[in-house]
Each structure stands twice: as structure tokens, then as C-alpha cells.
Length: 114
Image 1 (cartoon, rainbow, N blue to C red):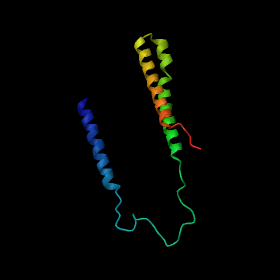
Image 2: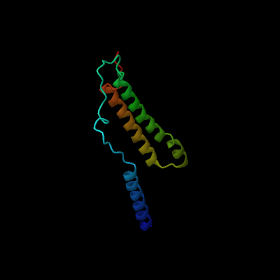
Image 3: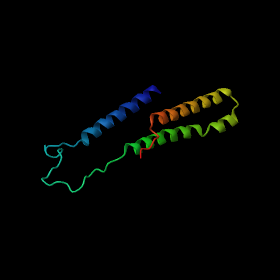
Image 4: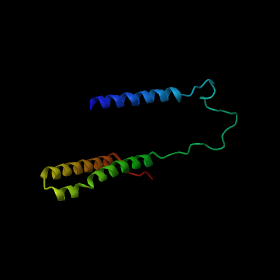
């Protein structure tokens, strides 16, 4: 079993090394990686301003969304098993979620400035 694992590890490592040698790009020209500047002033900015609040709300949503998907099968598990340690673990997990939500609320991450 260990021999198969070591063999698979060696094969995958050698394939990655061969791929890195074959697929490397060489930049012989110094000007290629530098930014392009012409003498004209830009008519508009290429980057629009992005509110950090949108990013924070999206990250908070993703975190709580993943945690909700972890919580979803808990009622089915409790229906099958009457083990109280599972119920205690679920209660502790929900408690941590609520503490995290209050922490975000107190720090103002959920406050949308006008």
C-alpha cells in the first residue's frame, strides 16, 4: 500500500516537473512585462471604485452560507440517532455562529453607511 502511494507520488511529481520545463515562457524583451504608457491623459479611469462594504457583506454571506450547509443534515442525524453528544455539538456550533454574528454586528461590518 505504501509502495503504491510512493509510486503515485513520484509519478505525479515527475509529471509536474516535466510540465514546468515544457510550459515555461521566457521573457527576452525587457519591455514586455512593463506597463504601457503613452503621452495622452486618459479620458476615464479604467478601474471603477469598488466599495469595500460589498466585499465584506459577500465574505460574511459566504461564511454563513457554508455553515448553514453544515447545519442542514443535523435534523436527519438526530432523527436516526438519539445521541445527546450530537445535540450538544450542534448547540455549540450554533452558539459559535451567533457569537460570530454579534461580533460582526458590534464591529459595524453589517452597518451600511449612507
